[in-house]
Length: 317
Image 1: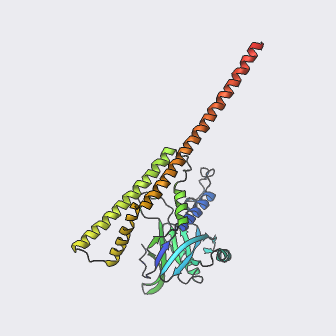
Image 2: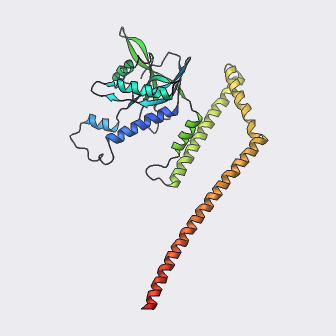
Image 3: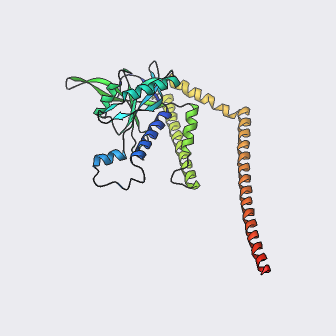
């Protein structure tokens, strides 16, 4: 396991970066191993080729801002990797950097990203190659392997530091902590992605169960965090823990925002929005009923016309 960073930098990672890396990996994996050809793999393929098809590595750059000791990673873009030289396509990188500078003039390259379970020695070669763009690049590594027992995000951020190992100074990767930072547009997009219908055609009941499970997990996590905060405050009141004025100010600010939910303006706005939602639900139900009724009437008319034609032919004969 890589040692922890000692730089003292604060890293903030936006969800858009994780979505971009995941989308990049999924597209490359699908292109290398399409569903139609997944069952036609011959016995002549080596295990390394099979592993590469199942878990291909993708590469790209992460961009954002650094203000003081805070590094905020906002976005990312893909890069081309040359497997013969184990290096990135530098001309493609410069072209993409120029294009992104026109769209995001305030952003600059903070480092790069890849996929895998852990940082390797070959990753350090790519890392050093980017030091002429950023003297202290960051390395964002996403692990695409699915682990249902893992609660943390499968994303690790590395920095590089000089350490003396066996009397020889050399650069090694050190992992650093980070927090998730979101803006309103990202929250809407992430919520939209979370509510997308599964590709396997899951039923409405399955989607509802998954949605309720997510809500239950969120409430359970909120309850556990409130309990921890409560126990901490009780221990601070008893004198078991030293008083932390900064934390008390944050708790006080949070509590002051809660009574706003009981004001008359909040109640009026809430009931107005609630009634609007009910009205939209009723209109949707009425529209659905009218559509079903029209379909029944059309079927009845079709059946009536067929019976009428048959009756006419019989009378004519």
